[in-house]
Image 1 (cartoon, rainbow, N blue to C red):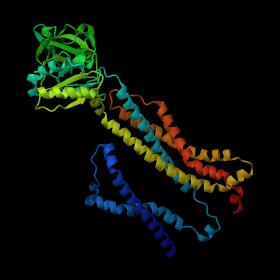
Image 2: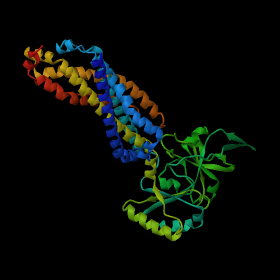
Image 3: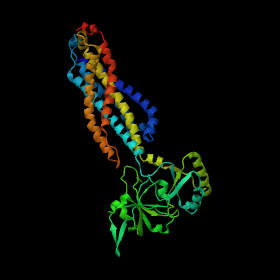
Image 4: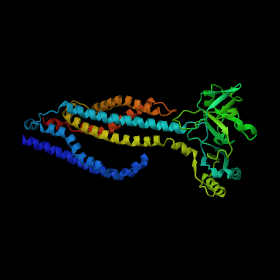
Length: 475
């Protein structure tokens, strides 16, 4: 009995020692990879976070706890061997030990397949977001803030640059696409001597004459604000979504009277729907009101650049900016970059899923390699008998590989519905999204199967090529 206790203690000590070595390696890798992880996640991570008392206690106690948990079963299991039976090679491993290994391999490959599917779906959705037509042209568009101090001299700045070859168009507005629509002043329609409130949530945007042309937005019917019509200060332009919520259509909307925010006016045009906000939100009902540069001084300036040398165009623009606004920094942003920033979280998720997939696949391969080594060692005599009876190397490799591919198939069958449910819920965060294509599941299964074959190929081929005499020599 004392021998058994010492054997258990030896196994546990080895397990704890391995955990301590793993902790040291993990700490070193964490220190080296922390800048990279911070860059990928966008979070400011520091190794100093581990210096908290509660973290230190967990940090130092983890190797003992994990070492004992990991080593207790093999310690008790192996110490229970009867020496006489072991030396006579009469001991046969219990089937449940093999089954437990298979469960681990299935679990590891199942997680790997889920991560592969999630990565492919996120990448597919990101590609959709970047390629989808937004209803306006976001290329070569820059924007900058317009302060109250700039309002009085802004028209002089506009006149100074409007004839430059690199300037296509310029507009002032209270908000710009890629922002949020938060303003709603309430709409009503005149009915005889009274007004009838309209139960419609319509967001408003104040723009000058050139907003539609600057962004390349097309009209559905009627016209946009124009310098040729002096009465446009009492006019409205609706988008298609606003016409729909009002119960009108784009043909009979033009010329209708409307009261919005206490201002009485007439609808002069219907503009085609475009995605002002991100594709997380559906297109909002919008009403456009006219405002000149002094009225929209709280808002944004949008400038459409011509093709060619963008850098030199910006340098020339900055020089003229400083002539008119010497106290205001020339701080601009590209609309297409702002649009990409709307999906920064999804881009980071795609990167993280890719790295997690690689790590999960590596762990699954290690588990499968260990299982294949164990199972092939148990079938050495069977392989030897088959070779003696005339089986060739190819048939033996196929025989051994099928058993492991069955585990990958089981993992895929379990992973597919989980991955579909998770990614279907994730896609519901977008008003406009892709469908989950069937080929993604097939691709994930094929990748997992290919990786499994690569992992076990060395052992299976070596076992198939082994000399049957050596495996059959001893009993």
